[in-house]
Length: 182
Image (cartoon, rainbow, N blue to C red; front, side):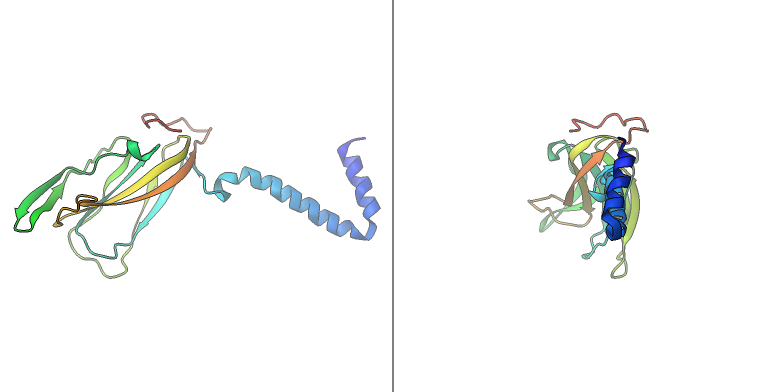
């Protein structure tokens, strides 16, 4: 007896409850289809663009950088900073921006600014996530600040991190050069 025959007999036995059975059957099909949508539903990123929005609530001239590493130990050092001496100690003047970044840096020199923006201003960009598998990658967005005193916890940089689960798109070639992807 094939599956469709069994299914038809069950529906015939249900009589007036047949409509409910069809609803349940469609719900099962929907759940099965959802398994294919698992990366989207469960927050997994598949070799694509990641939309980043930044709202700077306290003005600091400077720029942003985005990096991605298999774990925090593979994140890059903070940008090289040129300083000037002041009576309060060293103040940041400029930082090196890599116009052709290499892994683990995805993009450097984002939203360079030296003037205050209107309150509520939001910067937005799309950053390409490499086509890799990484169960627990660390995405780091740093804000390098000019005309800022040295901060013992972060130098001249504010660090913002998030953990991502990334799945490679099997239809695309894998990106090379990403250290110790897990």
